[in-house]
Length: 497
Figure 1 (cartoon, rainbow, N blue to C red):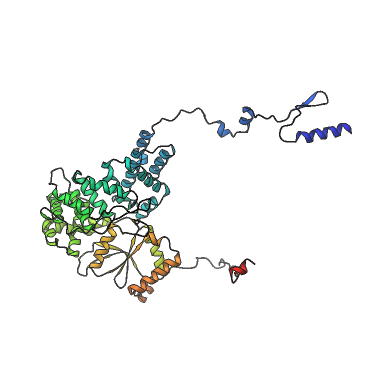
Figure 2 (cartoon, rainbow, N blue to C red):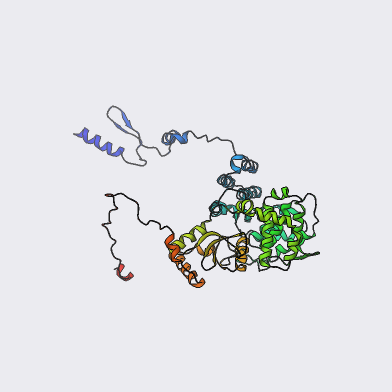
């Protein structure tokens, strides 16, 4: 019994945790029990590590100090060049490794812009998913942080990338516009044309005040009239053999987007001069038909001048030869506008469409409009309601808190729609996205009341009703719920008592 009791006491002592003053207890035939030492050996740690960690080589080569050449080479690879996710992955790898090289940021941002240029197959919704991604916004923020290290020569590239992405980076734009104005006389013709069209497409053209909010809450300088200055500088440049028809046609349409019809140069109005120089580079019908986007720019310029009736209307029409007008008119529907329309609907437009369905509001999606005597239409409204109400969606970021400004495309479309007799309602995404479904429906009902919306019962009967119950078979009907929620308390005081 004494031996049994002593063994049980030792077993209880052996289960004690932590260091023990006694080094060794002797029992029986010189048998010793050793307790956990205060220092853990390397063998004990390795015995407790997973096999995956044991396979890791802790003596890997130290990475080079400059990772920029490797990241630039990866961005230029064929696998990354066509994949927006891979581009953002390379950017994140560069930042996480401690790099803040402006060259990598410029290359990544420009590559994303080229992936979503007007000739891409991505939809407008894909573009918006990218620009709302956290890593993309981090990229734009890092570009703003290194704005002092950005070369002045990359300003046209960055503005064109913003235009392709429909992304207006308000903190970075004041610096880019300031550089644009500073080097106004040193830009080449293709750079001036690209700057003019990009700034106007972002909705930053015209003579209305253009002031941004910086990170400290202060207001920037007023950049109003910058597109007019670019157009006047273009009028001073002579036509050279190396010039492209795309440059002059793009600049002409940029002036139309910015509503700079009345801008004058040394020889009078600038818009007719730009149109004439673009037409001089199209001597034959074959070159006109293969000029791509120049056809779209020239015909839209001609149509908008005919609708808005500026002072230079006759001069613009005389600057374009009649045979070019006829060819563009015959090719418009099948070969020009069909290829120039954006692919798919954007996220905001789809959300507004769901709101229209919930409120039982009849509206035509992406419907063309024009004057009653037009042989063919040149513009498409986001939604058309009766009587002659155009509903537009502006997804562009605001200039500051609570200061929305539509893109150049939406602004021009709204001006043309008003000229042809439509009432235009513009919904801004910076306000719309913060509303609940009930608030969106309330806003839509208010729009219907203010615009005099007319509902067509006959059209409602023709339209196919969407089934509200799931399709099933006899005997497999949906079982009714046996559980009902318990009614809530009449007041908050009752709920806590």
